[in-house]
Length: 198
Ligand code: SF4
Image (cartoon, rainbow, N blue to C red; front, side):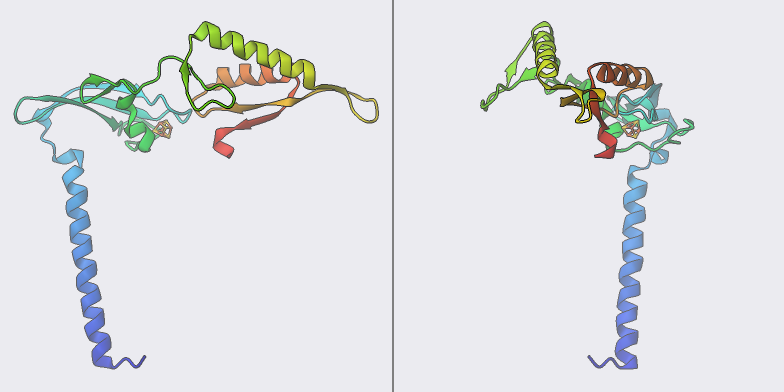
């Protein structure tokens, strides 16, 4: 396509105007949600806490914010004084309030009991912790009994459980990871993984 000097200047002018408008709009959008635009006298109590979701351990503030009508709202903000995250939170951390409540109500979507789906079933059943822990223990023992390989092809002792794997979660802390790894090794598990590497 032929582009004259005049056409080039017209196009660059339109592009620059568009870019300027985009910058202006983005700064308006950013400012409209910025905490610094909430007058200090509308901020209520701040309670520091640590995000419950992963082992990064970001610091957060639970803020009771009072709007101009006197209504109190609760929300989660990153703690700007926390050395790990310096005020930022990832989407999980920002949604932390949903663990307990949504719009001031207890979150009825939060699971507090194990759910079990039987093989071949399309339905999830709610189970008691005691029942589900007994089921897990029985399956772990059965799998280990059936799938433990004691020696390799050369007759060397390996005690390798080839029927099980262990998948750690990002919310586990150091001590829980230590115990999980110890228990897995004791069961002969060699496939140890972590959700952060998947
Ligand atoms: S889930 Fe996100 S906000 Fe929470 S500790 Fe991990 S990185 Fe931080």
